[in-house]
Image (tube, rainbow, N blue to C red):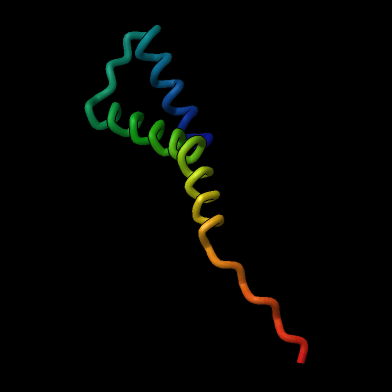
Length: 64
C-alpha cells in the first residue's frame, strides 16, 4: 500500500502544481488505491472485531 499511496500523492501533486492531467484509467486507479487504503484503515478493523466476537471459541483440548 505504501507504494500505491506514494504514487497517488505524487500524481495528485503533479496535477495540482505541474499541469499533469491523468487519464480516466489513471484517475480510477488513484481512486481504487485510496478506497483500498480507507477500507483497510477504517472498515476492516471493526469488521474483523465483529467477526471475532461472533465466532464460537474452540473447546478446550481433553487431557487424555
